[in-house]
Amino acid sequence: MVFYRSVSLLSKLRNRVVQQPSLSNSVRWLQIQTSSDLDLHSQLKELIPEQQERLKKIKSEYGKVQLGNITVDMVLGGMRGMTGLLWETSLLDPDEGIRFRGLSIPECQKVLPAAKPGGEPLPEGLLWLLLTGKVPTKEQVDALSKELRSRATIPDHVYKAIDALPVTAHPMTQFTTGVMALQVQSEFSKAYEKGIHKSKYWEPTYEDSLSLIAQVPAVAAYVYRRMYKNGERIPMDDSLDYGGNFAHMLGFDGPEMQELMRLYVTIHSDHEGGNVSAHTGHLVASALSDPYLSFAAALNGLAGPLHGLANQEVLLWIKSVVDECGENITKDQLKDYVWKTLNSGKVVPGFGHGVLRKTDPRYMCQREFALKHLPNDPLFQLVSKLYDVVPPILTELGKVKNPWPNVDAHSGVLLNYYGLTEARYYTVLFGVSRAIGICSQLIWDRALGLPLERPKSVTMEWLENHCKKSA
Image (spheres, rainbow, N blue to C red):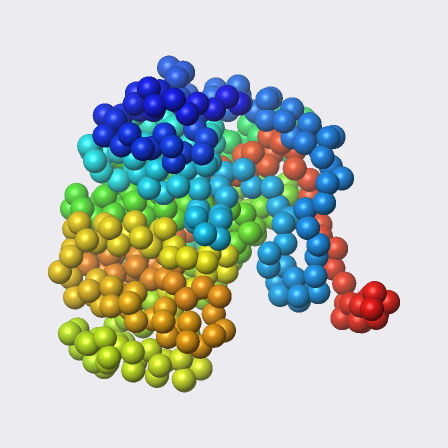
């Protein structure tokens, strides 16, 4: 794959990129999309053979190169820090944050096509980038938007499966049920049963993945409308893009809310392969489970309070601050409340991260959105005060490696401002966006022929004996 750094090529992306002359220096690698082909499938068909050869070369020439030593702490600490997965679509650096195919979030905001000049990137553009490593043109993104809309019809049995659950069931339970009900249409499952050569696995996987990505917003919107809006469904609008349509089907037609949803889906889509939802999807898919089964498993991991459910906990905690202290709380009062939370054995939700050692770039771009659109919102101002108050307190504790806010610290306040106030639902939004990243990597898993994942486990007795012998 050839990568171009030329300022002249970058300037062809969009007029707003011309206004950013330093962009070419900050982008580590970027392949400009020069093909006029609007079909994503044909793009992949061209890219896959060269990437297959690239993987073969890495394996044959560097297969015995060691990537590091495994310690007992890593084994006992949830495999934290072990380098053990191939994940092509994104890479997470402790200091820089996430890069999608080499592009940081601010860079994606500059170069990916938007619905309007200077607007937030369209999620379809990120999907194209994750799958191809190329920045698409607006025409290619529009074509992909149209294709996704054509795939977004939901069979009636999916709604019936969700309706079989109590309306009080957690939104993630209902959402996962809907995804499982979609599985009966799996093209990969049908192709495997008929007999398909493994070199072709990626093609029905691609079909399933694009259909799944297309359908999850409608399923998620139905869960929301069923729980909070008397079950009144809102049909898709063929004039809207992916993020705009999701906001519309939820019942929010304001242009700022549509922009927020475009940003939200884009920045939550992928976070390399080691997080629970991404790793779970990859693990289940390695058994050749189809994309629906794999993504449903990933959603069940996302629903845990140590992963995606944290975004609902943040807003609930912030509202508890307001309930007890009022909206105009001072920083000194806020410090007292934070210490009260910590001394009760709880954590301050939305701060810290398993990998990052700086403020999450996803937090920062949401903060910039808030400064642009809702600078005077009392809850946003409270979040800003927390940014000043919490990190020094967590640093003082001396036990926290990263005292800075993560993505969950901000998203709930933005959603709440535009009227999506039901915090229990927030993880479903996370799930919709995560479909883009998980399915993109799954297509490449199949294209590259990645094997069944099967790490070695040991017992405490084995560890004790091994360490005694090594002493």
